[in-house]
Length: 194
Length: 194
Image 1: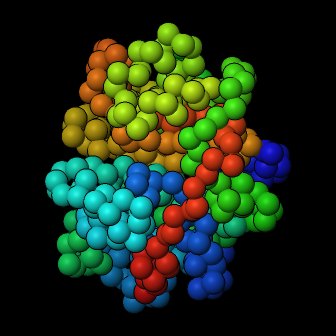
Image 2: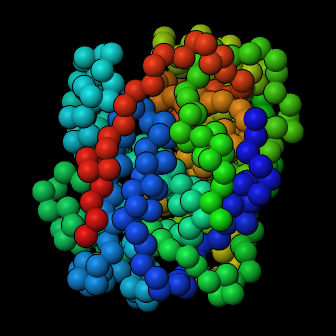
């Protein structure tokens, strides 16, 4: 059964990237609920490489601030939470738990280049699940690539096993502050059927 | 407003990766409906690099077959449609249309390494949107990384401007053929709040 027309609007058709936020904080429960949805999305060999830091406190926001592009500072500092979506290079250590029916599956990722490619692809897929999960719960988000990845990694992922992918502000956005929506490519521009 | 509990089940909590398919073909309209949902998901500078080939005909399936890992042959050949989810390396040529308020934005991607990194990250995010869109429409999917990317690129993206990312079988799956669901990482294993 398809989900309802309203639900399709909420997760895709009328969802917008937000920059202006209601100031009320988000509960820990809602942050856990986002993860509890997104984690069910599929990944290669169930490898689940996404790692998330929810930056919520003023102190943690100040640690993030110097690594943001100027255009991204105000919207990030004013968001109730900013998720750093990263990917674990060492995700294979969980494979015996995540893919228990094949005891050798973690060896598929012994090659560091294969592991990194797998982590980037699947960590980004999970980033897509994250964005949809936020919206499905009635929240708004504002994903961003405009920041210094190496600086964020030094500050938040000091052991070098996780790399930052993108940032995503989360909260309840102000729809009155939105610009007109940008266009998208048509089916014929992006797809073909053979 | 959050979407309904049933809708959360459909797109995340009870959705499963399928391998056994009902044989009825899918209409062109449903393939267009999938794209018409997923295209609204956000990407960096609205760059929208995903490109999709819907492999539907017997002839096109036979062209795909030699590039599949053995484990992926039967489920792919029997699926009503298999999407090749690719990313365009030359996505920036559409930026003046997609991001019209900044006439210089396409120059952000002049560096081929930056363009490729942007295409991989955002094309994979769009892959996540694709999977959710398929499920939101009441269909099932079976995404796969197990194939020869270079072989698929030679066969389906001959001009070299698009690279394959992953494959995704689409149809109505047989729930009786599913194995027990694999576990996922807990919040504490994958996330922290600071």
